[in-house]
Length: 441
Image (cartoon, rainbow, N blue to C red; front, top):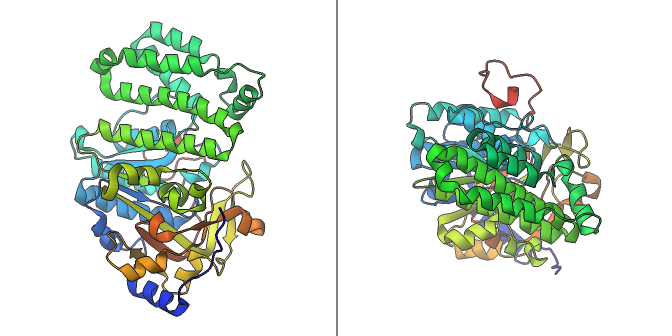
C-alpha cells in the first residue's frame, strides 16, 4: 500500500495549529524539563521513542522524563530495547545486587554505542542513588526486552542450574548442545535450517523451558529473583531460535517475532512486580502504533500497537523527532561507528512541518483528542524519518523514510530541531565510577 505523501490541508493553517499546540521545552538538562510530561503520570505504561539510536537529546530527554515518573509517580520498571543479560548487569548495579553470572562482557556486540554510552551511565548512576535508601522490594529496575542474546542466555540458564540443580544443568547442556555451535553467529543456524541442511533445535529448547518451568515452585523457594532471571533467559533462547529461523521467511515474520517477544517480556515484568508501572525506551518504529504506518500496512506490528490494544488509554505512546545535527551510527551493519551529519529533513515529512514551526524544542500532545482541529491536521499521511544503528544519507529516501499518520501513531511528539551524537564509553572504566560498574568489566 503506497499513499502520496503531501500536506493535504491548508499549509498556513497547519503550521499555525502546530505552533499553537506546541509546548516549548527547555534543554533536557534543565531542572524543569520534565514538568511538561506530568500529564502522562496517570498511565501504567509510558513508551518513549527515539528517531535514531545515536542522538544525545533523545537519551537525555527520556532519562529526565523517567526520573520524574520514578521519583514522583511510583513507576518501578524501565524496559529498554536491549538484551536481557547485558541490561541485567546495569540492573544489578542499580538495585545494589551482585552481578549475575553470564558469558563475556556486556554490550560488546555491534552496536556497542547504543547502550554503552555516557548518557546511559549517567542514568544508571542516578537510579542506583535513588534506590539506595529504599527497601529492596521498592527499588526500580531496568531490564532488556530484546531477543539477540542467544549465547549469553544459554550460558545464564546453565549457570543458574549449576548453582541450584546440577542434574538439571547436565540435561540443559545436552539440550542446548544443538544450538551451541551457532551461538556466535546464529543467523547461520537459521539459514541452515530454512534451507534444509540442518535439523532444527526447536524441540530441544522448548523441552528445556518446560523442564525449568516444571520445577518452578522448588526453584522459587530457593531464590525467586534468580529463577525469574533464569526463566527469562530460557524464554529468550526459545524466542531467538524462532527469530533466526524467521529471518529467512521475510522481514515481516522476523520483525513480528521480535516485537511479540519484547511485548511478552514486558507483560512478564509487570506481572512480576506489585503495582507495576513501566517506562519503555525503544525506537519510534517499535513505540509508535504500527497500524498507523507503512509498517502496519505491510503486515508488521510492534510493541506500541500491542500495548495500545492491551492497556488502552493507560498506555501513552510518545514519539521523538529531529531535523538535523550529528548522530552516532555506522554506514553498514557491523561497521565501525562514526559521528555522521544528519541531513535536514525532506520537505514532505513530519519533521519538516515541525521545523517550520520555528521551535527549537517542543512537546505536542493530543492524548484524549482534546483538540479536534489538531487531530485533523495530524491525520494526514506524510513521510517520517527513522535512523537506526545504520545511517545511509546517500539513499536516505529509500533507506530511512516511511509513511505515517501521526495522530494515530503516537499520543504526543517531542521535537528537537537540532541534535548531537551520543558519547560512547571507551573500554576503560570511566573516572570516578565504582568498580562494580558493569561497563568497566
